[in-house]
Image (tube, rainbow, N blue to C red; front, side, top):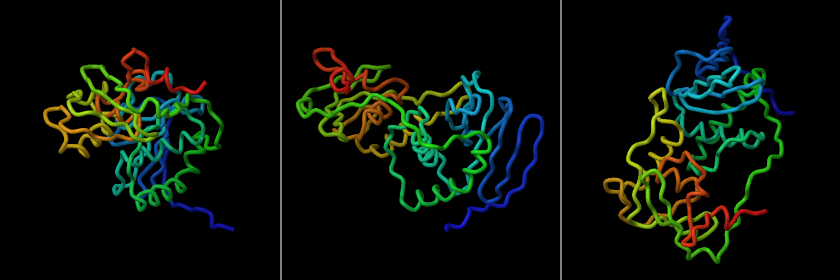
Length: 257
């Protein structure tokens, strides 16, 4: 039998929140109402009647429907955006409807660290209402079609313009000359959200192919979401923004019915 995960902690509570101090493992706060002050590096699980209706980093804009909030302050040696991505994957596996089609490269060492941390904090999160039993959920699936590999799909959204080829299942060629949205959008709180942070990270990875927000060489990305996040910091269904010469969207041409 595997050993039970045991974690020492201290805590306190009031009529507004419950605080669990995990020492070197950071802390977890459960708020009965929307907090007025919080760290811009905190991860929030937005709850409504014990169901998650949203996730965010340092951002509680447009959460009026929430009935409670779980704040995760991760350990200092964590990369917040990496752990947030790790967390979204776990939430999707548990059936939550969260957009997590991003493909981020996280080292095996970090993944092991995040998994160990997750097992430590999961009992606390479950006590606060997090459901972790996997459930089936239906979402549109798109089938790669070799016949479309040579079709130039155009993007024209929020000032971003690009030509993209879906060459293989996980290979999207973005042609040189693509115009990128210049600034990552800010939330009402004045912070850059996860999509913006991920978009900036993608641009950093391809900084040698960029000049003044214009792509100077062809690059390959791994998903429709990566393409949209790289070009215009997401914010819309990327499958609907990729349009063929005949005006059909990539969604229309490839969705499995």
